[in-house]
Length: 136
Length: 361
Image: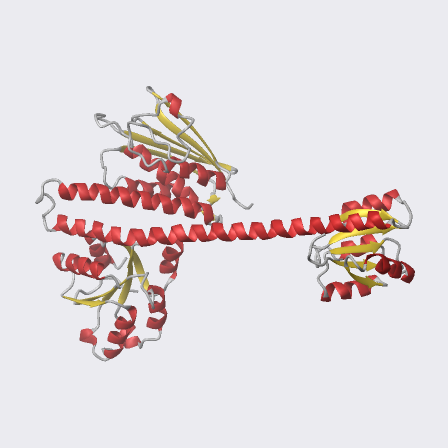
């Protein structure tokens, strides 16, 4: 489906401020993306995506999605994401980024049609690069 | 007698017996009587009785047959059989098939029957108490597992952030900026992460039900070597896998077992060894997989060989957690596998594992 991921914008969804900061820094040091949009909740991310549905230049090409978050967790976000218009989901790739070692989480992430990869925290620049060039 | 009222159901086709029984026992027990098995069943469906007494000889159905017919629907009440004749064969049948607690010959003796009902009620109580205790224990156990599991998750998330910051420190070339402090923080963080991961493995092994997946040892072992030799690239691996047969087994546990052994083989090398080597041999048969992992590392003292699989065993001179091999053994127990270890100067240390092949055909 997706191969190479263009590098104009990445969206980070994570309730943990420290991790948002770390991942932003890693992405900017490696110059993987031109723009980084931080969301500290899944709800926040959904409303951003809805608001910019007709604004393709402000939509991310990649979302890095945390799993364990209060209120709406990563998998619940994916449920809601499903019903976004094709104009939004069409050019976004999603990778989950989590410290989970839970076998169930890993399998659920692999089974989800929108998730191209489950990355382990801490975000590894080599893994990120590989994801961007090969889409897996 | 207990303060609680004991509810007794008595089934007999002779009305006189029902009346006599009621007259004798109504002061001690809550008595329900039924003139037929059908009526008896109706009472069972609406009242929860603890003791059932049934006459053996009834038209259409014997007492034993009646008990047999309710063995699934009403397993809990304790059964007493009343027999008017001493037919050994029917009694043997009764005891073997009907879960009968006592049999009493007719005409009954009030005291004997009274004692039997009392004992039957005690047996009933013991049975229910035990069941409640088991349920309670299972619940506590389950809660404990879930608690430790979620705690480990919560502990690990901030630790992973720390490791992420360490990565940034390296990327920004600050690692050597404060003497050895960053290195010390890294060592401690990795150690803590190791403990948390082992704790998770241990509790997951306790809890997870066994799954059956086709396992490709070639792929699994090369992935595990990738993961564990990540920080230590000097070890030479010689891998010899003979897998003609399909192997089906518990993927989580097999990964845990091989992962711990491979990581140990890498970790416990001699610092001054010029050619660090680990050989892994796998032979998959129709009935099992035989795996041997050999290394030329520091070895295990003879007197320690017996103890290495016990929880928190650590030898003085090495800084293990005392969890890895314990988890290996626990995981093998869950999947009926076995492990043997030998260690000496000339051949190094060898772990030999045997895991049954759960192949269905």
